[in-house]
Each structure stands twice: as C-alpha cells, then as structure tokens.
Image (cartoon, rainbow, N blue to C red; front, side, top):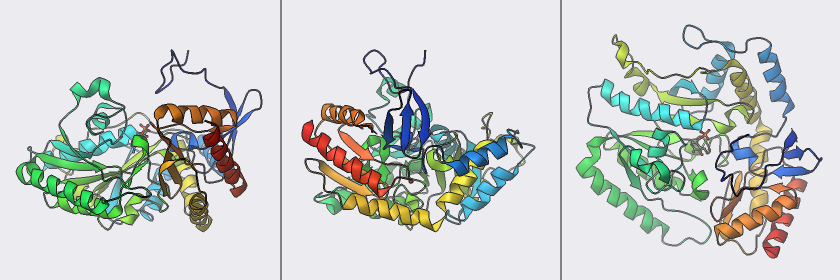
Length: 414
Ligand SMILES: Cc1ncc(COP(=O)(O)O)c(C=O)c1O
C-alpha cells in the first residue's frame, strides 16, 4: 500500500488515481479531469506532459542515463550550469547538485558551517531563520524552519540551535508595516551585538514563505535584514526552492533586492516538474574556503543520483522555455489577470507574480472550499486557512476566468 506524505491515512479521503496529465489538466480513470491549480506542489512549471521537455528527456535517456559526477562530468550538467549563470547574479558561480528541496538546504547549511570551520573559526555554529519558515523535512532543514513550526513539532527536541526572527507580513490593507519592520530589525541588532559571532548563516525564503501560507514580506525589509547580519560577518542563504523561476514575477526573488546572497538553493520548478533535481550555488569566496591540501576541508557530501543527466536535460529544456520573452510576458499577463479579479468574502488578499493567495476564515472553511472545488474539477490544497493559486504557465485566460468564477461560486456556497 502507498503511504502518502502529509496525510492522516485513517481519516483522509481515498486518493484519486490519475492516468494522464495534459497542460493544466489531470485525468482520472473515469475520464474526469481536474485543473491543477497548485502545479502539483509547485513543480509543474510549464504544464503537465510538456512535449519539449518530454522529448529532451527521451533523447537524453537513450544517450547517457546516469554517470557518477566525481571523475566524470557531462554535457547536460555543464550546459545547465552555464545557462543558469546568465540569469543568476554574477557572484554565484559554484553549483553543487542534489535531488530535492530539503537536500539543497542541508547542503547550504553544511557549507555555511564548514566555511567558518575551514577558516579556523569554530565559534559560529548557530543559524538565524525566519519565524514560520519551511525549508524541508530533513533534520537540518527542520531545525531552521522556525520555532513552533506547524510541520515539525514531533521532532523539535532534536533540532539544533537557531534564533528565530519575526516576519513583518504584508497584504492588502496591512497597517503599521514600517514600524513593525523597524522594531524587528532593532531587536535583532541588539541580540547580534551580544551573540553575533556565534552565527554562521541566516537562511530565508526570500519575499514569500510558501508553506507557512503564502506569507509575504517586503524586499526593503529583506535588504535591511541582509545588510544587518552581514555587518556581523554572517553568511546569507536564500532558499529559492519555491520562489525561483518566476513565482514572484521576476526570474528569482533575489532580483528585487540589491543585497545578493552568498548561497542560493534551487529545486522544484528547475526541471519544469518532470524529475527531481536541485542545486546549491555559492560564491567564489565561499567555494575558495574549501580549497586546501587537507582532504578534510572538502565538502564531503553527495548523493547517488548527483547531477543525473536525464534530470539535467529536463532542466536545460525547462530553462530554455523560461528564458523565452513570451514566458516573461505570460507571467505578467497572469498577474494582471489576478489583480483584475475581485474575490468577495476573503481576507488578507496578497498577489505576487504567479501567486494569488487569500484567507477564508478558518482551516475548516478552507478544507470545505477545497472539497467543493474538487467536485467542480479544480484541484487546490489549503495551507491552514489560506487558499492560493499557482497554476502552470500554460494556463489560458479562458481557463483562469472559469477557475475564478468557480471559486466565487464555491465561496458563496460554503
Ligand atoms: C522554500 C522551500 N524549501 C525547501 C523545500 C523542501 O523541498 P522538497 O519537498 O523538495 O524536499 C520546500 C518545499 O515545499 C520549500 O517550499
């Protein structure tokens, strides 16, 4: 039997067996179709069954399916790294492959800690993170997922030491935002003045905390936060596993801030949602700290499928599609559409790039709405009392119009 993730198997509905995906649509055995409005956990970037990516995968599978990335390298990995460099800040130059969002975060945390150790600084062992953050489900990633995480409470006694920073949430109609941003930064500065030299890194989901419930905060706050921690010699990790690849309207969330990170984590939409792959990307300065005649100063970390050629080929094709001018245009068109849609009876509406999120009162209401929408052929998943849309980029304006009309009807009926 399949044991599903994030599912209480005793009370959950039976799963629907999906036999085919095409564009935004998922088809079940009876032929009923569901519009995938969350891009299957934020990975299906262009659309289900994208023909170009499928062809690139088939071509690579019959050429070179796998090779160990130690004594060898291969063209799809090299092309991917070269092409990603053209869309990333210049300072991010060294690409470490792994398989998913949690592992890219683990790698980033290990790099940050060992960076200082390799330089002879053994004091910096702690991490700064944001309240309510979500960076994955492995132990390191859980540890930096903020105190009182709604996902990881069963394991909290095992987590390593972190300092959690509150997040000044922004949404339609929010008040006193500047004042709360300033307060948070002032408090943090005070704490850093006493214990700043015990931290190796700050890790954040830049601008949007996805799994927390699409909680958004301003680029200005992030910029000030990065400047502040840098003044205390702390490295900065941006976890763009969710925000990367146009989710915020720009290629990366870091495009909105002048202070660029020392380490970046990418995954999810990297392969367009076809295969698991992730990258942890670091600056020269970070990378150089691992160069030594001492083998112990190497990054001693790796996974069996590191840099799998088929996954890299999918990522190369996905990136090529992302880099087309019409993709940027489509992102802007989708965001404009969201902003043109009034939604009656919802709270804390927040729209950014490909994401339109709103609150519906309680987690129970959110669940009822999701069930109601499922019956109408629309697949969404609540995050507490938040509902959100993040459809694949191939969605048409007709499909979006239909989805919003159905959401409005569901809101009225539940
Ligand atoms: C920001 C962020 N980081 C890391 C992860 C973990 O990714 P994965 O589920 O691929 O391990 C997620 C997953 O949602 C995420 O949103």
